[in-house]
Length: 239
Image 1: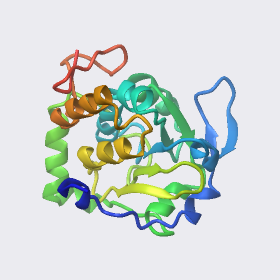
Image 2: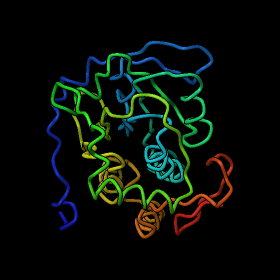
Image 3: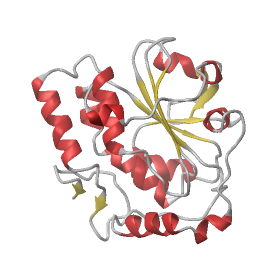
Image 4: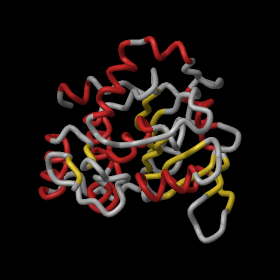
């Protein structure tokens, strides 16, 4: 195991907190309720636990993974989903059509969010705005041209999970500490490559290296309102 892998923290969420969660799929032809565990029954799964669909910091993070969807889902063979805890107006549709372009599920009981908090919701109150780390995240976001709005409840902190197939447990988790705090991209990609049945293939390894070289940087061309239809190149820019 290399030094980078040793630095990846082990998950602390109990798998039992996730296996019974029920979700509603929002972007199919018809809405349907499913057991979340069925989504990772046969393959690993990356789950984006989104704080708020209209949040530009949250949109920035999902664009980072959407721009590498071909690598993650097609080459590594690991599906990705986004989970939201509220449905206001057309916020979920805007989020998905403009930035995520993938599967979105509604967690009405906020069970993924509770799991990230060890059984309770974690709140980032408005005093967070006085933290230098939040302003650093805001300044980072301004460089990406990813836009957003202020609709909805944005104080419930989210995060990210990577599940192993079946009942094999949680491979990785990241708990959003303050608004706009994202999981280290290198950690996520390293774990995904380790879990992938194709992770040792030379071309896949090179593609992962290129993604890591870009550090997962996100940038929409100025004037673009969303991610849809854009092509993201090696350095992470989208055009």
